[in-house]
Image (cartoon, rainbow, N blue to C red):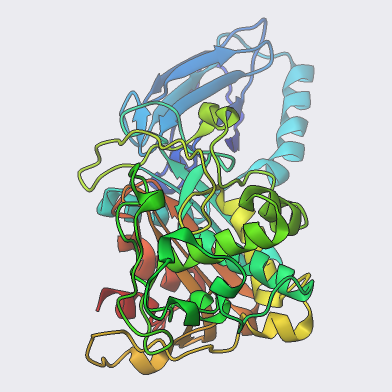
Length: 452
């Protein structure tokens, strides 16, 4: 809830017109709740009148009017922007009441004025420009947080995005799988450099040439030679579709969700636990990520975002019945930011293992693509991208489930992190602007490399 308080002394025979500025009026959609303006005015015998424009409702109490403007996303109803309202006292105050009210004004004003950071208005403008209905974003620096929940869960519907609204985080789950993998590495469950098929005979790779050379380190660095997907992972036939390598293992970089599925299945076999159980025990639980899961639960239905295509048309909500670290993460920006703090610092990992998240495992030389100017700036660690930026070394990853897009970047040397989740296929259009808005002007390499 965004709360702005105006302290005004309204004398008999006098009226005050107040117009909310664009900056302050953005509190409503910026917090995706209600813009509540409480006006302390001279009242006697319950008198006084409020004339308003651009406000959805007015509820009065014995002491003051409470004026509420309901917002969903960018739109507030009625759509008068900025809103204005007029205060008029009905009767005269007694001298004693006048003095008491004046004292109240002096006491309340210094602590009651809430102003919106210009960042929220900027974010809303970026969302509107990119046609993104809803966004969660969380930025941290040295432990201090700036959190934003903006827009609509579903375009054209009144429900607004909250900090606890569930989003599909898509491939941001790969880093969660990687971190869980490293936790198990510290426990001696497996070796990074032993072929995965020597642990578990993955049925989809049976008979595939060179598949017996694939290791966990190759999976985490996207050098297995496997395709991203053999077929649509949401299709019924995908789980049993034969899988073949496109490139020789460890010869070049080729982004692969299939590789992460292979690793996940191996860990499930070695531990005799489902991936959801593993991640709850090793990551979500220890890091207090209470709003995250790789499988759908009906409890999410009351506060979940719908994905949208490029034109803003809502898509059906996907109910992931099986957990896949490569694509089915359901989370919030607040939860994922907690995870990023562990990713930056190596929390709950052995020091040498933590270093695997900040040191290149390979140079990310893309298979079958000519070299570009950004290639020297990008590498891959065990489960996260690395970028050389104007602000130093960065960890990063994007998420793309079609109608949901997400992104994170951390600056371990500066103890900064940024994650945003969007319910739109247009979400990554905002990424460069968001990096510069929060991290500052400069070059961040990752998005340019990704678009090449």
